[in-house]
Image (cartoon, rainbow over all chains, first blue to last red):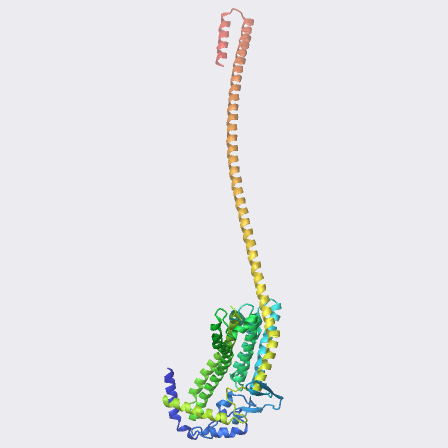
Amino acid sequence: MKSGFIAFAFAAAVAAAPLAAQEHAPATQAPAAQAPAAQAQGAGAQKSASNAGAATVDHITPHITDSKYLEVPSLDPSHGFQRAVTLPSGWPTFTIPLPLIGPFLVDTSPTKLVVMLWIAAAITVILLVGAARSHTRRHRHGLPPRGLAGAMEAMILYMRNEVILPNVGHHGEGFVPYLLTIFFFILIANLLGLVPYMGTATGDISVTATLAIMTFIVIEVAGMRALGKGYINTIIFWPRDLPLYMRVPLSLILSPVEMMSKLTKPFALAIRLFANMTAGHIVVLALIGMIFTFQSYLLAPAPVAMAVAIMLLELMVAFLQAFIFTLLSSVFIGLVRESAH
Amino acid sequence: MRSFLTRALLLVAATAVPAFASEGEAPKGLLSPTGGLMFWTLVVFAVLFFVLSKFAFKPILAAVEGREQALREAMEQAKADRDAASALLSEQKKQLDAARADAQKIIADGRATSDKMRADLLEQTKLQQADMIERAKRDIEAEKVGAIAALRREAVELAIAGAGKVIEKNLDDASNRALVEKYLSAIETN
């Protein structure tokens, strides 16, 4: 079935190849992410994509990485119904002297993904605080929630009762707000990336790394609070039931392993979320790019159909990755709290 | 298929390699974090965490808890009500059974009493009847004896009266005698 579909796409491509020679490739994919001056060049380069050389313009990377421009809807078809709005710059900057890495420049000027973060946070607040208001209003009349508030409650309760509390362990109620915030923030940011003109904040390593570092700190603080002085044993391997001449070499070998295992957890969290969110977008862009590569309208339905399928998969992945990030954070917190026993 | 793959790979390579070069100010790979975005992620998340835990999760979980509490109370109340109702029902059933047994007993007693009474009455009536018959017989006998005696006395009276009449008219007269005899026979037939 699937191979037949691909074969059909190829037949269409071969048949359409001569037709495409002199047609005007629509410049809809011209990236607003590029500087507006580069757009004319991008449209020109689009036609000569086959003779890949110095004129080739990368349309995929600018779309999935951060930029200083915001794509907004426009009625002008010559720029692909979009307009690039330059975001303000010159906001305060400061450098953080990091040990081993060196000075780390922090420019607080908003970029596209910063705006996406704001929008995601605003949507999350509107959704959840709205749900909470509806909850309290209806609860006063002794009624259960309905509609969106009910859906939010179902998600919150599922995450709390089925995911967070069983994994975090006893007296884990204190971690519920943090993990729920993580879940909803990532979920909304993921879904925002599927909306036209928007960007995927969670498809950038900066965002996922920050979230993972915060989770790392939460995990370690949870470990310190749960284990007290015994927390040191999760960093330095020090088996008390072995004689000293065995303990020292074992400790020298296994302590780095312990430390590595601590650091790989947030690293995996960051990379997993980033890679999942980025991969789908790259696939969608590559599929759409096939239309321009083959310079054919006849071929267009096949990549569009595949792109739609990938977008549907992305919709599932958006939920799945938010869920997995929360689940794994809960599991890691539970692990470090349980490691006393 | 293979040519497609190589073509696609070539395309990706062709598009990806210049990306790092043509990025503008700082060549930035996909995996190098930017400070501004990290800073904003931290700030946005901190604000979101504060706002959500104070204005969203707390009220929602409180409402849920309240509802669960209300539900639990309602269930316990319902259970208590049901227990009370079933206790009441069993008591009522017991009472009903007792009442029914009482009624049966009363009916049985009544029937026995009436039977006994009827038998008694019948007995009594029979006795009375027999008594009355006996008395009537005795009365009739007495009346009969009295009547016979009275009749005899009357007959003697009449005979004496007749004899007196005869004697008065003609004593020792043959025809008179015949007359007396005739008279006497006439009485006898009466």
